[in-house]
Length: 304
Image (tube, rainbow, N blue to C red):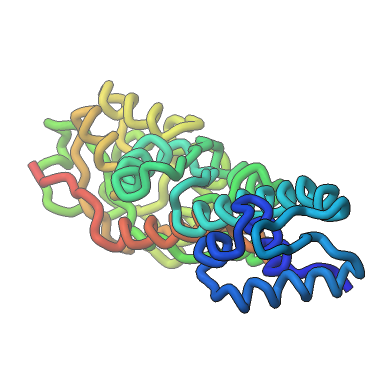
């Protein structure tokens, strides 16, 4: 039989204080309970560890051998438990998040700043990625979670809905479409359209389904990043569409957004984590916080 933690703690307390009364006070137990733990320890070991007399106590030869070993074990355990408690109570930790470039330079910095006000000791490490690389980083374990548009279901990934947002048209001030409160997709077809490379345009056209033929988009330019598309719109090279969460970047370029109808198309964004894998307390808390932050409402660009 192995000694219990209570028995070892009792032995360490007596050895450190040299006194049963002080050791019992330190452990918040009665002297009789303390004596019982020492006797149980000696019975378990089959050897005496403390010599008792009316005047003093002393460690036996076996006690002297066991004291540094037990003391180191208890110290290591207490440090480990304290570390676990710090993580569980968000007094320390790190959360690694992957997100598409546009979200990484608009929504997430503000969310991370708000998180830091609540939990200054838990760091959030942000990895800005291409949309197609987000879930790969999650699956590889490089990050704890990733935010990306809807993907085909896979058992290796667990998805939690974060955003469901409509597309908005983005036009420069003074543009012929800028004077209208809302636009139809067909309105954009008469102007050079700046799109993103990859599946962006294909998915838009697929989502349009039975929309009027005049709403069909034919990109004049295709770029890799929305920041490039917005810069081109600002230069008067065409129009584009974006998500409401990018309002801050749209405003920095001095551009205007307008709701899009006929049809109203939306994009759903999910928080992806590895399936069947437990998250750290910090990661779980950050995901819950992010959902709360987004649910409280995103800043919107005023109509001009």
